[in-house]
Image (cartoon, rainbow, N blue to C red):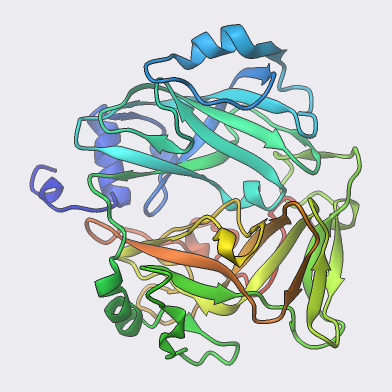
Length: 372
């Protein structure tokens, strides 16, 4: 461990396991992913008056005492647009040189369930500061459906670091060419440097696919507003037509996205994440429009890559919502950007179907694992 820690970057699976064994993280080793750790909810939950951030030095439990409406019973569904705070089963005892970032899991984002991590005394979402010791809390807001949760449900994940590991602008072009990161629909490597612009910094630009397999093919889904309950524990048991309506490709390859509706789309390009990297979709750029293109934007090493680079990418699925106004999207319009982070060392296993990864082989706008 001491020899490995001299290196800098994202902690891979084997080093996360070492942290658990050393008492720096209290967690079940079964929740370890290639470059992240899944977080499970406890049965301690509160309905809050609204969303919040703790002040410097302020305990989350002190905020709960002042701002909660009631203690929630997870045997009952969470109401739409209700703000809930749920204690997570994991705790941290980080040394001063380690910190973490959090993000929603894919299955959480694809049902429009917004989650944000909070820790004591730190006024930022989804960030665990260096040396943090204490509980972890999850703010949970169902936006489209009534959501039924169960103890241990894994809605969120953290990645552990000992330095800022994002690939720099100077190195991005070399990483892109060496690893062949993007492919088109015909599985040809996209060589254009337009994907990496100086304006975008160290991020890779990808575009929305509104063409699909031709006119009349399914290019996405839109939420249906109703009061049916989506039970997170029931994998593959829900009827998709009760929750989403399909969107079909039009001749003009465009769509009018209605304000505040929730959509599932995918990118035209297929992306892959080599073993020694992880990927993250960056928060939407306001100069591209008043919309958000993802709620679950983390990609473990191996996604669309395979054991030895034999897979030529998988398309990224997007959870999209427009704010303020209706928004016209056209095929091939820039929709998201991805950055890459360097692992300290390659993970000892990768994201794949072999480890039960539901989205490893996605090829289009795939709904969450809860649907038949």
